[in-house]
Amino acid sequence: MNELSAHYTDPRLAALYDVQNPWGPDSEFYLALAGKPAQAILDIGCGTGMMAAAFARQGHDVTAVDPAAAVLDIARSRPHGHLVRWVHGLVSDVQGHFDLAVMTGHAFQVLLDDETSLAFFQAVKQRLVPGGRFAFETRNPDAQAWKQWAGQSMSGPSTGAAGTAHVDVEKRGELVSFRSIYRFEDGTETSSHSTLRFASQAAISALAAKAGFSWQTWYGDWDYQPVRPDSRELILVAGFD
Image 1 (cartoon, rainbow, N blue to C red):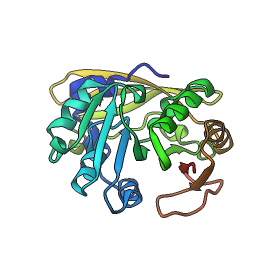
Image 2: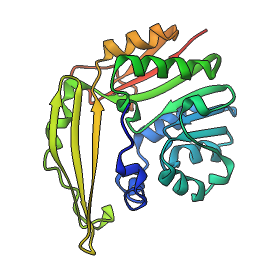
Image 3: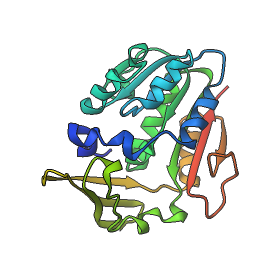
Image 4: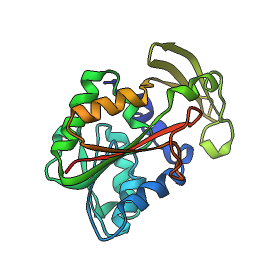
């Protein structure tokens, strides 16, 4: 698994997260998946807590876990944050059992090999009640999103920084590493290094099955379309009886 990126551990970068990753169709997908009536939900890699707080606002019993203290500080202070149990740590640190577990924001891609991913699937399954579901998304490697990252700029006041660029993009097998540079309006600059795994649908499906998830439903977009070769997303909802 990755060491934590500075994007999540540096308070100044963590403060940019919601602006760069606003509520969107992915959020609506997960909120609809939870549905009604109230369920016990585990939000894994919850980040700044936008999804967890939305679940709680809908009346669900929510536990949210993240290894980065800086994003949890933001999560605790957001509206409806007091309704969520925040856990600083990993899935293995979470107590209880849940009807639904989610992992949003492409966080699954920080699991960099089969051994780590299998152990993660097993840990999630252990915390689900029989009939429980686990849902997450990962970028489809066939769409080759990393080719668009080199030199990508998100300059403008909406980012909270004077400029942001991704450099040193390098692909080795399934792993893509890159560095994000943030230049602030006060003239200061900081950077964050990330490595992500672009695992295939077949590889992920096999790991989920090996961990004991007996059924899987895959989507290629947030409008429930099936996976196609040009789908940007691989969205999995998995469960067991």
